[in-house]
Image 1 (cartoon, one colour):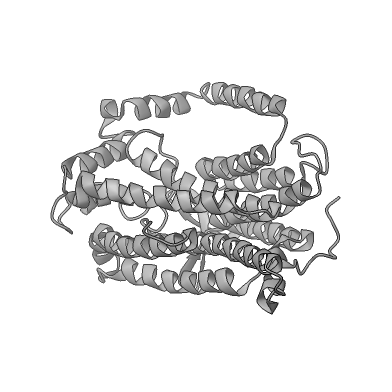
Image 2 (image 1 turned 30 degrees about the vertical axis):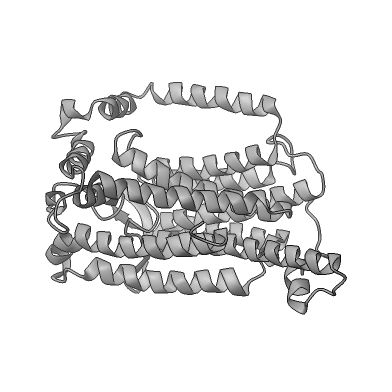
Amino acid sequence: MLWENPKDAIITLMILLMVIGCVNVFSASFVRAEAMTGNPYHFLIRYLGYAVVGGLVFWATAFHINYKKLMSPRFYMVVAGVTIFLLLATLGIGTVVNGSRRWIYIAGFSLQASELAKVSVILMAASFLGDRLQRGLRVSLLGYPSNQALVITIIFSLLIFLQPDMGTATIVFALMIGMYVLAGIPRRQIFDLGILAVGIGALAMMAPYRRERIFLWLDPWKDAQGGGYQMTQSLMAIGSGGLTGLPWGQGSSKFFYLPEAHTDFAFAIFCQEWGYIGALFLIACFVIMAWAMVTIAMNTQDRRGYMLVAGATMFLIGQAAANMAMVTGLFPVIGVPLMFISYGGTSLIANMFTLGLVIAVYRNESARETMEERIAAGLPPTEENRLRVVSPDRNRRPFS
């Protein structure tokens, strides 16, 4: 194997993807940056700044925080309260960009509360559902307190929907539903969810503009200069890359042809300049990272740790897959970034924090295994084993 353990694989791939992201963000944004600010390095400098902050967050979370301290009911309720406050603040004082009020600007930096809501959902689900699994309690979407985390997530989704950002609202809600499914809700409820999704989809299609968006997704070329413009430009950018891509920096789509070239559609620019081979390499990086995260989840005995890593995998890898599917026309345009490759400060920090939690769970499980091996060999566990394995909140008040 190239790596000795999944932790090393995740850290190596994270650094590699950030290097690729720096190169791609600069290539995709220097034309727009020059036109907007007179500085072609504007977005690259900001990306690097957010990367430094994200790196510090990752380091602190992965190596200096026992994730079990984040699993208490009090902490997750504080996280939920702060997230709701930020989402309300976004609706009240957020800046309108492209018809949506999604960002709060503070001292020249932007904060996107909806990205933080995704991380909040993972923490809530891991804490609440993991605790119920640990204590052998039933998990259900119906009835309080079993649906407590779901109710809070619905509030998140409604506030995000009002921005309006239907794509992110759907992702936040679907992420929590996915966590409930992983926790083992009854099969009948899974079936009912499928029926409900079909019904909501049918109702949504009753609106003429939504039907038009679906038709344009299926055939964007019929209105290539109107509603299908972004998708057709994305497909042309990908197609023009061929097998090995155009010379770096010379892709034409960034010259104001492809909207959101450095954010949601950064993968199209990457494909244009690195070709089919480059796209396969990038996809392979995400697949290997998914394998590493699933390996950690499947070997985690603590149910809260398992739910935390499983939720992180759905969030990070699922969103990456959705972005690439969107850019290539397999999904409708839903406005999600590609982890580390797209420009976005809040998203970058949230991604690195989430990966830090995954590494923290891995380190805890490694300490547990080491302690069990020492006990089996007749040796006392080390102090580090005790500190990491023994939950510091073992006397906490349980969930209802």
